[in-house]
Length: 58
Image 1 (cartoon, rainbow, N blue to C red):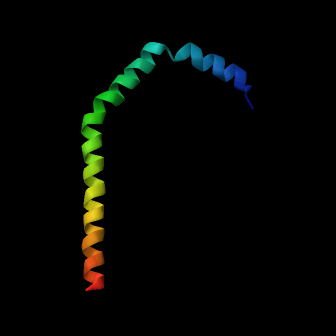
Image 2 (tube, rainbow, N blue to C red):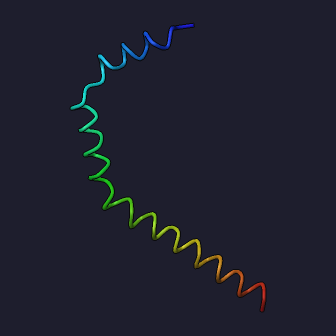
């Protein structure tokens, strides 16, 4: 089993702050697309659940 201190040191030498900034900027860039899709998905699920509930209670 590897020493966790050694693997942390190796990882910190590979991953730089500019790489993390690139990942963060990509995630922030995807938010305007992902957020409305998630809200729409939840709304469709709630709508289907509401309709099925009305049909079962009728």
